[in-house]
Picture (spheres, protein in one colour):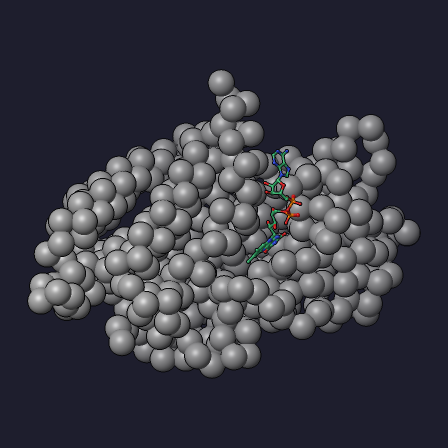
Amino acid sequence: MQSGMIRPLANMLPRNLFNAEHEAFRETVRKFYAKEVVPNTAKYEQQQHVDRDLWNKAGAMGLLCATMPEQYGGSGVDRLYSMILIEEQAYAMDSSTGFSLHSDIVANYIFNFGNEQQKQQWLPRMASGEVVTAIAMTEPGTGSDLQAVRTTAVAEGDEYVINGSKIFITNGYLCDMAIVVCKTGSSDKGSANLSLIMVEADRCGFSKGKPLNKIGMKGQDTCELFFENVRVPKENLLGMEGMGFMMLMKELAWERMLVAIICQAGAEAAFAHTVQYTKQRQAFGKLISAFQNTRFKLAELRTEIDFCRVYLDRCMQLQLTENLGIDAAAAAKYKISEMFSKVVDECLQLHGGYGYMMEYPIARAYIDNRANRIYAGTNEIMKELISRSL
Ligand SMILES: Cc1cc2nc3c(=O)[nH]c(=O)nc-3n(C[C@H](O)[C@H](O)[C@H](O)COP(=O)(O)OP(=O)(O)OC[C@H]3O[C@@H](n4cnc5c(N)ncnc54)[C@H](O)[C@@H]3O)c2cc1C
């Protein structure tokens, strides 16, 4: 049996994004995953969510909302720190922690579109892990077609009254607050009808389903949320009424980059495990790594991984200067998630029957990976976005 923690192979194409401070942070994250997460994987998978206090531990180590300014509890660092956190999660072969969605998506919505009072109210507590957050867009009846959401928020005096339900919500079970995509208008232009409303989990009428029974990512908290006449003050509106779709579009490019980063690092981890395995296992009196088929397969995979790495790191540079286009981010998500699927499938094959056994990291990678082509916009939607830019 192999342990989950691994590094990408040293002889992959060198990268040039990170400085010494980034590398020191990487070391901190690596230790956190080795000590706090990897030993508890079986427990998280059994209960279908991480322990609540893992969030506080991550907060205490400065791993949550690190890119937020210090005045809001963060460290004011660049998004390469987010990249490192996600990469180390992937190198640990962990799919239980939902930190990135909280720190790199929800926090950005509040920071970019919230007023000062909302930022003060939520961001420091998100950074410490006191508050866990989710973003609730998808509904049982609609996912890709966001403009068709049916959860309504009707204005009544100083309040909104929310009715509807959401499904497949990451961090949903443990969340203390969710940003909920609601329909607040009925204009012909569907995109003008959506608003983002922050709903605290202890509001009367807000309830959560049990964590959903997924085929993979078993330790990640994913559930349904229900809203029955939930009353929230109008101050909980994020940005302006009817601007929800525009706000979602702004942040979705970065959300797609997050998935591309997971997939790239996941492919590197799967590849490293496989090279290691084929150098230990024998058949017909030879190491598996000595067969020409194995060597050619590994050469093909290494080439694909390196090519995607260059594209992704270039996109990351563009992201840092806020020059990354929606189409390029969509291409990164589409291509790198497809690449990861191919890599993990070929790598499992090179493990033979052991690759089908859950105690081997490659088996978990195989099933956990599948969702990457679906969430943050399916790969078909990514192709729509790319084609629109032509
Ligand atoms: C593990 C997991 C975590 C998730 N976390 C979250 C979360 O935190 N918050 C959240 O809001 N959602 C979340 N989701 C939901 C996810 O974003 C949606 O599942 C996804 O957007 C697809 O929506 P859908 O499931 O309704 O599929 P549908 O939209 O019904 O799509 C079904 C099929 O039709 C295709 N299709 C749809 N429209 C088109 C088109 N125009 N052209 C071509 N093909 C099309 C799709 O590509 C897909 O193959 C999560 C999902 C999973 C699996």
